[in-house]
Length: 127
Image (cartoon, rainbow, N blue to C red; front, side, top):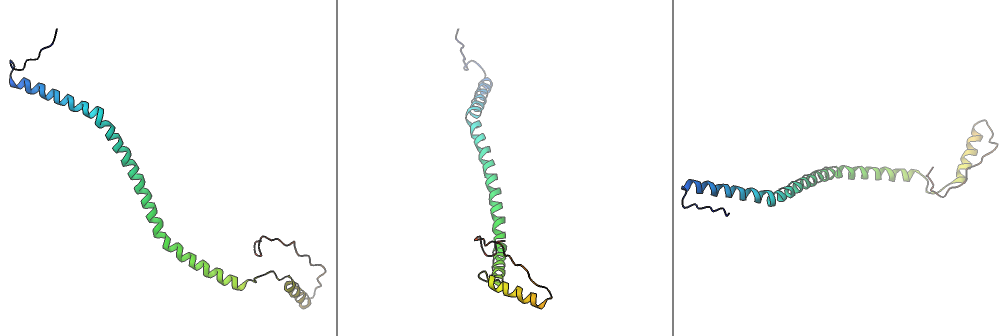
């Protein structure tokens, strides 16, 4: 029992309705099976794009602050240069002992014992 569909015997509106129904069913099938995957891919790409745009905004904000950081580095380097001029370049233990002896003579007390701590090679100003 085969279903025969003879459109010649029917009105043109029935053929039009069947054609529209077939077209809609075909369009729905194409959309469901093929375009749905593409739409999901578009959504994930848009999400990735938004994340990248946020990263770009963060980078631009950091770039705006970069000039301030460079100015601060220059200022700190000048301060460091001033401090290095003030501080001695090596450990002057003998000079320190002479100064302490001079201070003890100027004041009315006697220095009975002076025991400096052990020398660390970490650096002159590390402690």
